[in-house]
Image 1 (tube, each protein chain N blue to C red):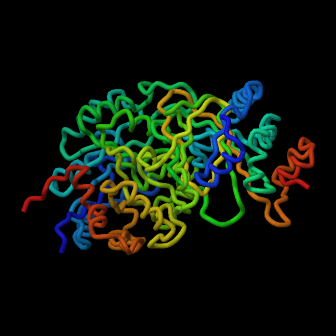
Image 2 (cartoon, rainbow over the protein chains, first blue to last red; image 1 turned 180 degrees about the vertical axis):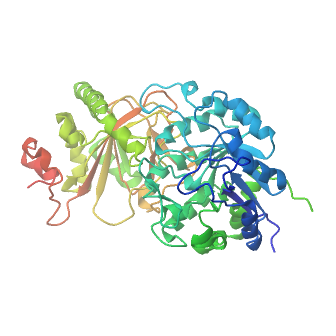
Image 3 (cartoon, helix red, strand yellow; image 1 turned 30 degrees about the horizontal axis):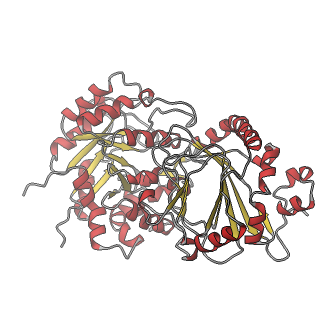
Length: 301
Length: 236
């Protein structure tokens, strides 16, 4: 058995909405729904996954983070957290520090960057809506977790370039959904219609030259036109392994995949999609890269 | 540049590219820039909407249907500075929709090293014409001489563009035309200036036996007034 850690680099857990654990209620996540850390741990242990990154959902206010914060506190050697920042936050630095100071939150997920609408218009980086967030992440060594709108790709390039000390993780193959591309499928999972890989080669994937940029290998269930193991993304996987050597991180996107195709099958996806993947690449993608880049501490015992 | 036709042919065969400085004269360049200025403004809102919908990249902007917009684009399509050589190299050719392209300033080039195609198929020539001066480090076209004879795989190469062995950068003044064999590895280098790179890209392909005609350019049929130009654009 390999000693390499197996780390799920991106997933979500949440509790029923309550006074203790307030969260936003949606059609997909009604108040009574819960996807608990206990159910996640069952899946992880059944499939040999050691650790994970818990990514906040259900609201960006500090109070909304209560459940993830408690999970991080209960399992400090297993989990790290990624928080959210309210779009209208007047003091993002204080918000970031407050969550990070509570322990376990190592970074923040951004869906918008607030860059210029027109790439051909004059621009000043300091006018970007998230400039202060990037600058504070640089000062405090926070990770930025990017799942962007397509319109934010241009801004992403300039910010990545301006802040080479910020560890940046593009979520879900770097896909940046365009307006109208996101929906929920019949299994209650996110679905992004027809992401254009040609455009990714000419934008997000060009940022592979920056050593501080990593890529999350996940989300195929939401993008593929084919059933598991999503063979239409096999060439993409091979290409990403070359473009992001040592910087590609497998993630399950639990709980959306829990029933279809199932957590265990997502754990096996890399070998199922790319049978020729070598042991070293496999170990890196399945946990080695996340451990090093996100600085997971060695587990006790 | 004072290359003779024979020298250009030799370079094309051996290295896969020919650069012609001063291919477009000052007056025509002025008209070309005016056309870019006007139609870039006109087409931008539509581009930005497509970017927001995930249908276009924010890393380059092409004027929609430039051949319909301004006569200067038609004049360049069969420009005497290069069209004769194109026909020598590829025979009786038809033209694909041209790209009047503006590349916004971005910290890294919008494209990686790649060939457009593998071996086989009709002979093809691509021509890139600089609208403005393109200095070194200004997003200039680059090519790996001789790579057109090695038929490399057609995927995009990851990694830094400047790291590809044996590549040749081709900066040049406005009006430079670069003919290249698109089986060879080519790219745009990073643009470290604060000036977007503007160019027009023409793609010519040898007319298939007994074919090559289509309605693709029917919208400008009344402006294609010579038999040669109608033939180039695939109109009978």
